[in-house]
Amino acid sequence: MRSILLTAALLIGLAPTAVAAEEAQTPVLSWQDCQDGFECSTARVPLDHDRPSGAKIDLALIRMPATDPAKRIGSLFVNFGGPGSSGVDRLRARGKWDWLFSPELRARFDVVSWDPRGIGRSATVRCFDSVEEQQRFLNGVPVYPDTAAQEPAFYDSYREFVRRCEERSGDLLDHVSSANTARDLDLLRKAVGDRKLTYHGISYGTHLGAIYANLFPDKVRALAFDGALDFIGNATGHGNQGTTVPLDTRQDVPRGVAETFEQFLELCAAPGAKCAFAGGDLRQKWAALVAKVTAAPVTTPDGRFDRVSLISTVWDALAQPDTWQDTARVLQGVWEAPAALTTSADYVTNRFEAFNAIQCSDSDFPRDPAVYSRYGKSEDERVPYWGRAVVFDMMACAFWQGRDDDRYTGPWSRWTSAPVLFVNSRFDPATPLHGARDGAAEMARTGFLTVEGYGHTSMYVRSTCAEKVKREYLFTGVLPTQKTCGIDKSPFA
Image (cartoon, rainbow, N blue to C red; front, side, top):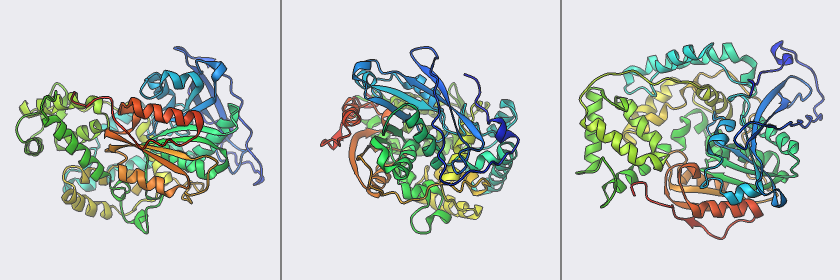
């Protein structure tokens, strides 16, 4: 598919006028075969929904047509999370994962995804002039500063990153909030001919779905929220948190990470577990491993590991229990390796840029770097290993200049035309169960299914039971009576 660019009206800076009551035209979709059973199209939508006759952007779409057209219900829109992930690429890669979209579900829905504005092929946020420049810059910035002495340079790097984004993406940064993506989604719903929306939102996609539900409460047919957030906490924080507490710290993500890692160690140590890291007291072994790479980085065939990269590697892996056996092998390799050096991995997408552009548009953040420095110290003491890493995970937002006046900050409890189903793992390192329960309580009509397992969302937590419950809800719009589901197998089985 061709790259999706801002139209000429935007590029030359036109500012056409429009009456407030004017509605955006429903996009006309022209689906074309794009291999492997998928069809692709583009949708033209307003850059600024307050000025629907003004500048336009094109959104890239992809769908898997229902395999049983006679029993087709409609379209199931899917947002795979992020923000920053290409829905086009992810549906192509994951659309036929049976534990995520079963054959029974694919028979009755056209499964549709898209690159939301700012992402991938859709009005791409650019902060660099080339992939090579992007790689050089981002490979020079650590995931987070490991010590207070590293913080000033870390802050300066993010100031420079924000400057580059402002210089290269300009006015686009004022129009990439999830509220505008929700308005795009309603136009896409109309474009496929559905009277109401059927939607599966994963991780960040639950935040987008909650905004849609509150902007268009009468257009809800069935919304499945898979790995959900505390929506108030994410947008503004509770009380004065928005300007005083870093975002994932106020969501208490460190607790979710620590609880999931504790399960990793317990399952690894269990009799019969296929876990290469097993042996002795694993909590002590982990502490010794972190101390080892803090003293001197080590290199294995899996890469170079210092304290930051080791903790980041494990944190990322905790979301995907299918990778836990391999992660245990990596940890054991680091345990056995001598000290050495190697190079960093390349960075090759705009996911990082889009993540920051969207998240910084959606949420309130402290603007004073000193706040992050204070929390870096206190969170390291409160939740060792994980607390400090979480504090700095959205550092660009402290310096962000883009401002989307259409961002959504509530209310979150508008009565929807159908109830919303929440699904969450008991041990989720990215969207902890406590946050998902808070999010469900903030909305008006919800049900909740707890998956008794480990990892982040049904993309990575295989549960035939949960897929069936979610599928039946998407078929009928009726909340399940079942409240819990098991997983198909243990990560170390």
